[in-house]
Amino acid sequence: MEGLMKGFYTFSLWVTRLAYVNILWILFTIVGLVILGFYPATTAMFAVIRKWVLGDPEIPVFKTFWSNYKKEFVKSNILGLFITIFAFIMYSSMNIISSLTIPSLKILYIPNGLVTLLFLLTVLYIFPVFAHYDVKLTKVAKNAFIIMTINPLATFCMVVLTGFLVYIIYKFPGLIPFFSGSVIAFLLMFLSNYAFNRASKIVEMKCRVGPVLEKKPNMESFEIG
Image 1 (cartoon, rainbow, N blue to C red):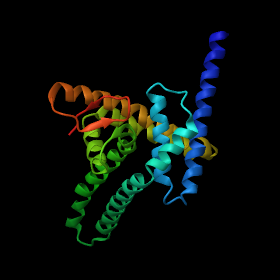
Image 2 (cartoon, rainbow, N blue to C red; image 1 turned 60 degrees about the horizontal axis):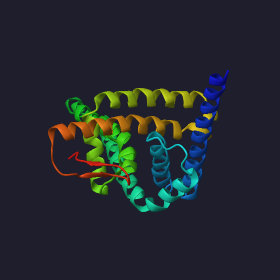
Image 3 (cartoon, rainbow, N blue to C red; image 1 turned 90 degrees about the vertical axis):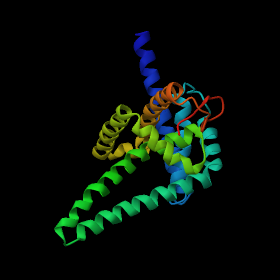
Image 4 (cartoon, rainbow, N blue to C red; image 1 turned 180 degrees about the horizontal axis):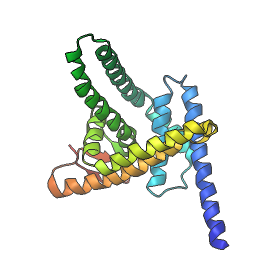
């Protein structure tokens, strides 16, 4: 019974943590009038969850969230602007191709679809990379893309499990206020951490060059590209 109660307590504790950070994510998105709040709140949520994944579950959640929200407010919105613009371009391209009346030009679906797929897969890593490394904003997407391509297993798991979680949340909308963002963020950060460690080992074995990506304080640095 002691083991059962301990397991139940641990489970309840993690449910509470995830619900709390999800509520903070929603509230601070609203505080930023949604448009300006979504990306900083998402960055802050990943910063908190990164600490948990790295084995520090006792951090002051609100203090860590608020600190990262303020610190990365401008940078995360700039990053989010580029993500939004690129997504709009991909969406517009698909609409333009679908409206073409020349059947032979429909082949443009293939390269456009491939670019869209690579973009979506890269986005899965963008916030984990942004939260985990001290890296110039211009290199966040580049390094997220590189890590994505050299970790097909982690990327595949991200797609499948994220799709499953989205389906569960869609079927049970009552979960949205408590777990719609935090559970997915935890999954992405957990798998990304595996990808980061694997990338570090690959670089140490093959590259043997100076650091480009520097981890957040108290972490080692390593080269990606």
